[in-house]
Length: 148
Image (cartoon, rainbow, N blue to C red; front, side, top):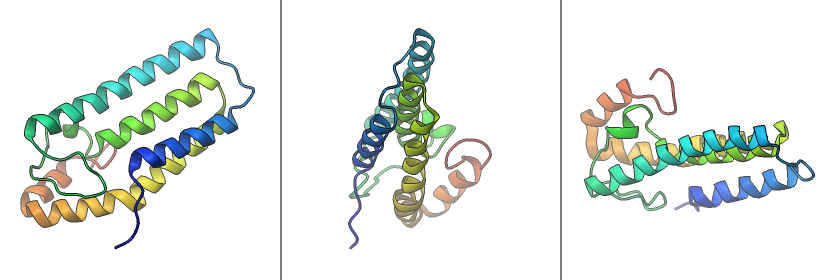
């Protein structure tokens, strides 16, 4: 069994890198407003997904993947990974707030790490547990955003 860091830990490391890269860059009123809009949208996406998972009685644990229900509605209707997208949105919000494109680099690193290390493990478990139902979901819902 390989060691996988929980996605919130990866996001926290990305935030620490952002803070270092944004040193000396102060927010403005405009950057605060833009960052707030992105942050609120990200929070709504993440909270909606968490609430939907709780309502369906399935796990939120990304380390010990053990889904009991395939959630395909709510935020999961537009993306198969709304919670990870919400974390990326929060990181993007920080980059906007601090007004530096360099702070977007850890956002990209976070997404690559999640896409390559975490999501394939989850997808394998979901495919094994839900078979054809999961395959239909994959065919109609993109991993991130856009077309499947």
